Image (cartoon, rainbow, N blue to C red):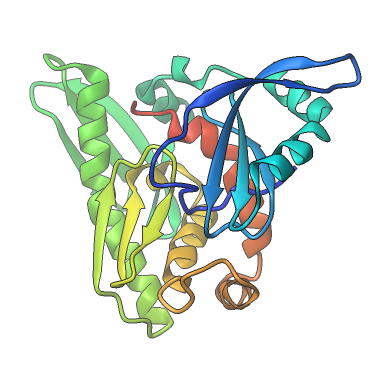
Length: 254
């Protein structure tokens, strides 16, 4: 339907409302969250992390026009809401163990999780070993370890990519954002989501390059995309893939 950008659609989370949306089978009540975004270039519809419809209005677009747009896509929304998976049922531990790798330094490093007397992580050329204190809450300790590992790994990777392109990097922070992969402030501070170590290396690099491009272009204009595509020739493809995996990965570690 449309690609969800990496920037937040609003500073405050709007309330979800029930709207009767026309479909080929008649009106259907659907949970809808209407957001305004100064960065959006066009109207777009996505499915939120909790299964609600998210309607994003670009600057200058009225609610009335947005609702008219929404009403033309009732069948698409009904289809995708009906296929929603409750990603909250997937634990961080089970996800990491099933996936079997973390994205570090532009590659996939095998990861093993074990339990011991003290929580720690060890990274070497053979992979990553995560040890969780068996006396602690598993999810909480694993989250703490992954955030610590991500703080080191993502800063190092971002610095490497910025140096490759001679881009000045002021400051980097690793955070626990709920709905965005990264952001770049007017002062050049880049904030990254720790969950980036859970996504494929090429998608991780795409998101890092996306934020680095904002050091030059603080918008999502044609200039921005041209610049980003000079950094990553598959930027638009990677953008679609990031949108596809976002709901599941963002639900981890909540």
